[in-house]
Length: 297
Image 1: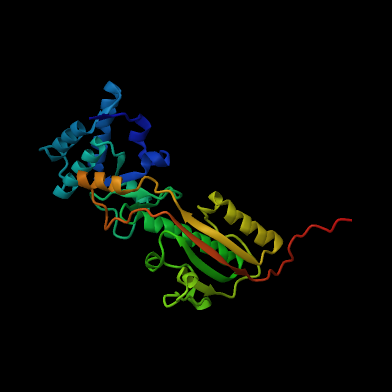
Image 2: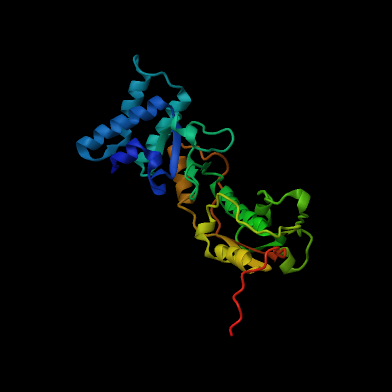
């Protein structure tokens, strides 16, 4: 089966838009370079690539008497990748040298594992198994970090729908334990208390700022509105939502296709669940007076 491919995507896959580099595997430099050379020749001759043919040529050269010796694990991983490509799964193979500029989970990258790019950070990749958990946890942590820098003294996290207490127990809450008291409401009887994932009390700060390196914040107008109201007008109470509705194409269908091809998911796959958590609380009184407009004459 042939698949259309453009030349820049072959030469510099990590410099492409997110959709073109979302799925990657990491392979030996010799295999990746040979694959790209063969793919470019195919493109120049007929503007398409037969990945099954490429795999045969590359492995024959790599395992031949004059080729570069590769391990059986690397060979199997490459064959799994070529099968995935031939079924239409747009997985990019990058070399181990290229992978050195990327951030992976501890102990990675490994041969044959399918990695998914973070949707908002260019150089971060997760395994397909943990993608949804760590992506939502990262977004939630950013929201909490913003509130801490803005001077929150009370934080309440309430489950609205989707992932709830079992899920929240597996993510880290970015609140310094020395300055906060966090308690899960596991024994609560009322429906309202059952929905509370955790509560925290803090000293807060009277000089609100925004933390550096925010990636979700520019895409969340409500978060921006609250930050502006706090820093410019002395907002004292807040309520915002952390939502996770897009599966980014990482779903049961992708899992099945990758598994059939022989790619490693990197653990037990956790499917997407449309989720909303509501964060409410209070800010500490600002040292600086809010910028109020003068009263009309």
